Amino acid sequence: MKQGVKSQEEYQKRAKQHVPKRPVVSNSIRAFLVGGLICEMGQFLQQVFITYFGFNEKNAGNPTVAVLIFLAVLLTGLGVYDRIGQWSGAGSAVPVTGFANSMSSAAIEHRSEGLVLGVGGQMFKLAGPVIVFGTVAAFVIALVKHLFHLAS
Amino acid sequence: MTFSMTFVWAFVIGGGICVIGQLLMDLTKLTPAHVMTVLVCSGALLDGLGLYEPLIKFAGAGATVPITSFGNALVHGAMAEAEQHGIVGLITGIFEVTSAGISAAIVFSFFAALLFRPKG
Image (cartoon, rainbow over all chains, first blue to last red; front, side):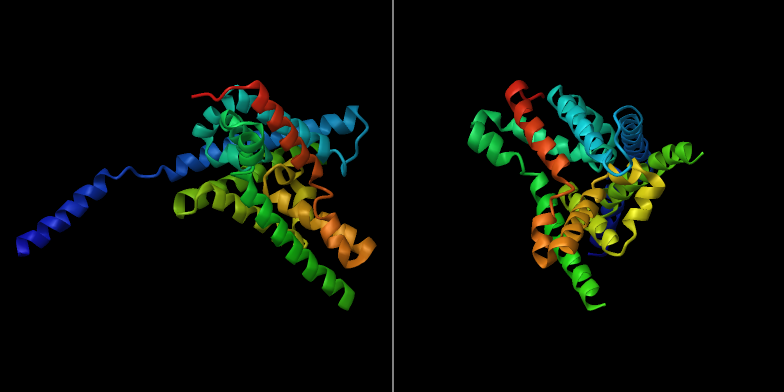
């Protein structure tokens, strides 16, 4: 009995040694580099829209986001974005390009189920939660803020 | 001078927000979808507290490109419209600012599904 407990403990110890450790530090460094680079591209595009296309600080964000999304969808279609994602983890998932990637990859993947049920129905499979919770949270927060404004 | 510093902070803050997402994935049991949801709600909350706009002024695209800015933009749209049209504006204004992102993602993704075949 005693030996049994001991060998169980030993087994747990042994098993723990063989569980692959999550490389938290190197994952974070990768996420930082790729995420930072995507934002840097956004900053560069924004500057281009302000300097050459007559946008200002306030409205240059819209064309910038649209171009980033276009590039992300294109790279997703070519199968490149998902390969980047395997290396960078959250670095390519957290920027708005990752949002576009989740939608376009779902749309492409489910194309074989038809345009309506496949593409239309599955496009928001991954992006849906973000929109739903973002919208509900934003509504509640804006409501509270608005009522505060009215009261004061 | 401020021009070049924004380029530095865009990288640092944008990368930093991605690291927060990565740490949430690695150190907790949250799935990527949960992490994105947490980040969007955080962005909305930060804007509610009036903290996200200063971050955008400071880091430019480093604050507007990560998904947190989606939450910020939703609150912003709702607040701006509510100031003009009262409480109904909360509903009508919520997608005002994010329209570009969502419309672009839907339209481009639809055409991508027509053009490309699944890989791997």
